[in-house]
Length: 220
Length: 123
Image (cartoon, rainbow over the protein chains, first blue to last red):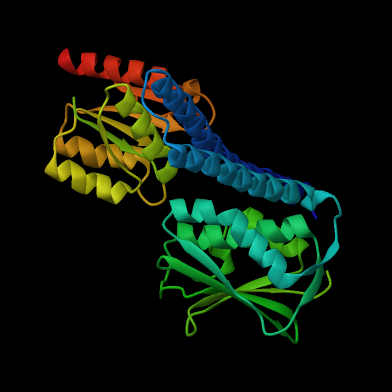
């Protein structure tokens, strides 16, 4: 692979890392903001109580519950961030395809929601194990989603399906609108095409089915 | 002073509204940007406190919708993103906006509201 391609893949990786960590950190901030307001509310209620208003124990309990809920939420986000950050630990790994797709969608869903998209995964009928570069794989999935959303190639609901086929595994993104803009891989950014090369994959568009199909080998 | 609070985190915006009410600042609030537009159709707001990143309509887009109803409306943006300076320097929306980084200190928010209201009176 040429230096330029390597650089493009690295840049894509940095961009992906930045987008995902930015999104997760935003979510954690929101949890902290809710905890902050509830802690402040506790102080306000204590002050009111000191001034003579009888304490509403149910209210106090609800505040405590909300704080606990937000801590649980932020813990889940931190776990997500942690898992994502460790995806670069081992270059090639055997993974459950549906599980990693689920995680990839989970990473992407906040950004997708900001762009008015909801993402869902239709689980395959059987467990599919692939051996691939996990970080590049997740980056590729994000590039596909980003491409489709950016082109306005789908309405608000995107469903991802996966299955085994003779060439490896197929990951289908749809339903897509009929569009002349969304025609071939050439219209994808260069970094996405370089990622495809690293993953030994290919992308095609099935106009009839209204799908973009990413095919990857079972073993890289 | 009519104030509208909009943030997609319902628990955040409702608790903030409650705490502001303890301080004598009465606000209308919603966790839905589309609903905010409907509310502004029915009532004229002087100040809007808006979350920047919201699903669908973000804070800046919402600002444009609301400004059509009341060009004199002032805006305070709440962001979970970086620092206040990041927004002041990076955003094309400069001039009369105020920014606060979450988690906000309620006294700071009230101070910004007072500044915004004062600025509005000077227009």
